[in-house]
Length: 380
Image 1 (cartoon, rainbow, N blue to C red):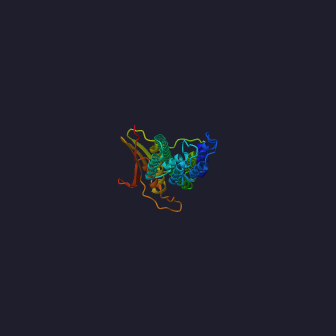
Image 2 (image 1 turned 120 degrees about the horizontal axis):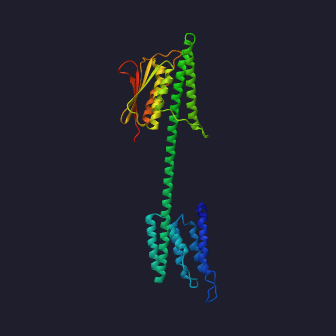
Image 3 (image 1 turned 135 degrees about the vertical axis):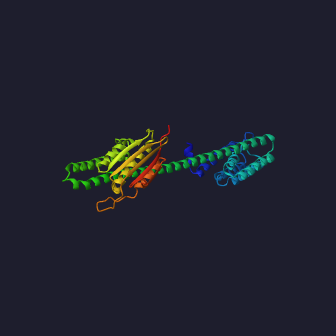
């Protein structure tokens, strides 16, 4: 009911309130004088109507309505034959409106003048005391209403601000997730396509001279394709509404298998782990695999190397990951694989996303290229 009333136009509410107050104020005048059995003087009806009707505009001009109501009501006793009015409801409602909607200095000044005028114009001390108590109560209720309204507005504003912040965070999270998926798809496709192209180029060369090696090349193409399809299906399954089988993403434990897979291209890949393995956070474990996958893909595509090496060095609070090769680089021919230009950038982004760092450049201890990544270990 309260929500429905608040949803009504203010003028309708004030009109209904004015009608109720007018009826309550006219009630003492609706019966004849018990002493003389004569109707009351018309003056009382006129004053009551003129003192009540301005309440329709109480929210638009609260001080004017209060002044009109009080001044008109003061004229009520100019006629002798009028009914007694216990309470002037219009003045109380008008003072409540001033307290609820007017500025600080305006409402304080009007309230003081109203109390002072009531004390000076009434005839008896009892009437003065009763009027003062009623007007103070009306003013206090008006201030309580204004405070409650301001508090509700502040809460609503805070809720809207929190909702906007939540939406911004959700958009940032969605953007971060899209970037992560794009990086994963780039790594998966670039790695698989590179291996497949290298094997496809080698197959026709040895198909007659070394059928066993040609068969191994085609098997490697099929294995790389199946692995890429499996990872893509798992990734896309997460984006669907329905439940899809979700295998865990490859991590550090899968690096030996990755080295073995790349070795089928003819590039000899060694793997070594130094130190005692420590716990690694899940995002760092995935990042280590993806960084190694991207580095090996770059070696296969661009290095022209014969040998590559993956080395894990476990320190107290850091995991060092080094991927090196002995290549001198090769010019791209008609069958070469052009670089997408995002390999090293993706490596740095993945390392930074889990609090690590990455560096890449020519080796200082011989020919080839080196990618070094430093990742933080999980805290106990």
